[in-house]
Amino acid sequence: MGIVALVGSFIPVIGDFVAAPLGLVALLLGGLGVWNNERGLATNFGPSLIGATLGALALFIVLLMFAVTR
Image (tube, rainbow, N blue to C red; front, side):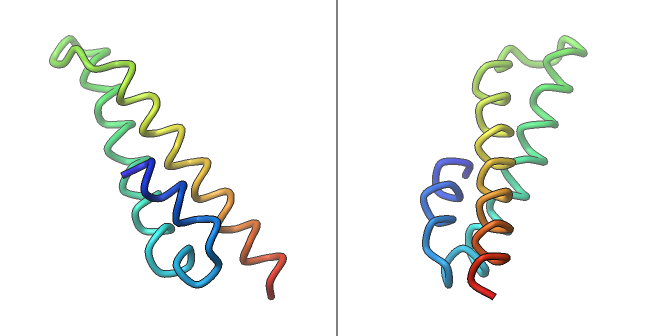
């Protein structure tokens, strides 16, 4: 989800309606994966961290594009 959100965040209309929710979901699921890894329930620290980072970056780009275009 983080990759799709990041790619979609560069397109203004798609970023507002598709990339922002996907970025938020990627950030939440990535954070949940990191939290589960720290508790010893999962072994996917790297992909979870990358997904959360890409989701946060996508949200930042969507907000930046929103501020610039409006």
